[in-house]
Length: 346
Image (cartoon, rainbow, N blue to C red; front, side, top):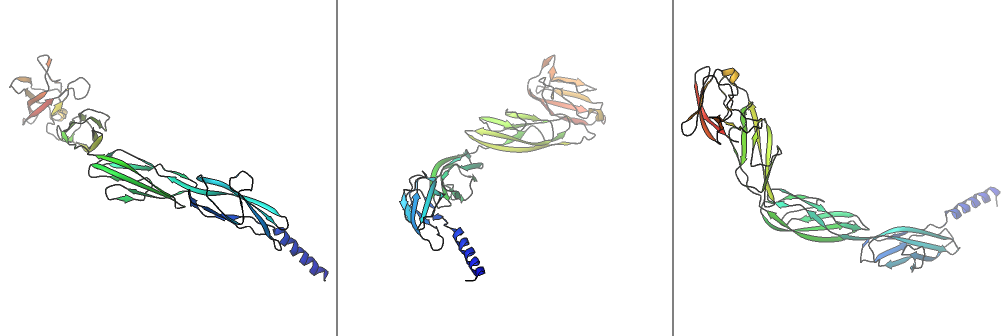
């Protein structure tokens, strides 16, 4: 034989020999309670053959749990199981491999928020998945609607009891369903009343009150009273809670520019807190001098001055007047009579 040809053949024979035995296996993806089929993909080198397939199904390092190139096994525990395959060839070559075999299991569970009509109820998936991965979510809300979102929200328009059904499916096709009862309460009615216009002059104010009675209230100003006094322009809200449900109303106030006519406060609160303690003609410096008379509901004159200085504190004869409506008559630089009411509220 040609020496060169001999060397070439020897080189390829060596390369074939170097390929050697390859070991691998495949398995079907199952859920707990189903049988796992394990199939050897081992390949011997040319001119050799496999004579033994030994399986370790417990991950203990001993290949004594099964024999053959294909076996079936029912795992008793969900999760990822360490499985090994050891292969031996006729020529005595031995190799082994370990892989994680997933045994799927899902236990569907969820939590949900408080429910009231017209308000958002939130639902959260709290399921436990072993040996698999969550794939799809199905929620039915008990009112004929459903969604495939993982953590959905829903709004109910009618109070009552609703059964929430939740189904979780994994990539391996494992599935579990659970249900909970959700009680949707009736959101309370909420209306607001205002002591005057929500558009007022700088230095004036408006009192905003809830018409209905609630267990508790929270205003965007941080107050928790039945009414608040607003002195500035802005957007405000109030939330009222009743029997576990709530409703919310929003309102807006704005400031308007002074005109050359007396701008007279229709409400003041002489309680010593530093806000609205004095009754004022808000643009007095523009329209003075002003003659002012104030009467109570019985016709008594409780304030009479021909040059008012924005200094009345709601007192008469040295005593504070009670909360009530009082009647004023004001004539300023143009001698035009301005009349109306002013409320004392402490």
